[in-house]
Image 1 (cartoon, rainbow, N blue to C red):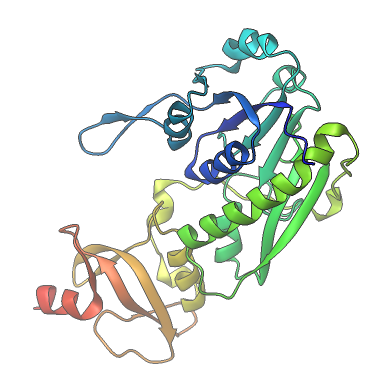
Image 2: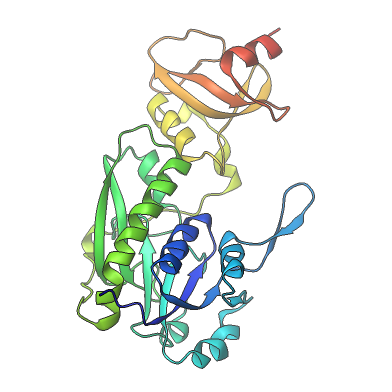
Length: 295
């Protein structure tokens, strides 16, 4: 029978966290608390918006902690005895002083095959680099970013058409299943973590708004097409077409242009625009944009 008697403290903020928290709740684990970032202002109205994990936790009457600094939660964690920590896309580095409050430490779900793509943008990096395979890793959290020993990993094949949202959803499902499969053995100590191969380590960087600009003179058409798929949602991919700054949401490559929107890249191939968001904010296909904006 699956061991769900341990009390879990769940760390998570991003939408990627939501699938794992849902899985833990549905599997019958006792969630002693959810730790997430403070509510943030979003949108044109700058209204306070709660992380989705907070919304879910509130629905199930799970206590929610939103510390500005993690030292604030030490009394709450100690009051739970020696809980197990589970972290999925929390968005902050956890110091060793917090990790040591948990038994057996904090278990982290990371969306790459570690030690590849340590850092904050592994999903986007896998798409941009044209990887044939990516995956998820369950590891023991360490104070050094994504460097802890590994409990389990699972590969996920890529086909070269995935968008950022699609791959986020797919890896959230794969990762949650892997977590639930291995969590009982991690908690009871029968599954031991193995050190990462430091010689195979690679890193990815935090994406910025400035990464939205597509400089086609410095990249191949294939690179540009991959970046468009990787940057959907954030930071997006912007081009100036017909003297208008647009957000490109779908494109393909071709050896020759067919419309005035097709742009030559560094390698001489063309990035052909299929769908975009116009300056008006309306999402449309290339033909609609040409009808509305071509002189």
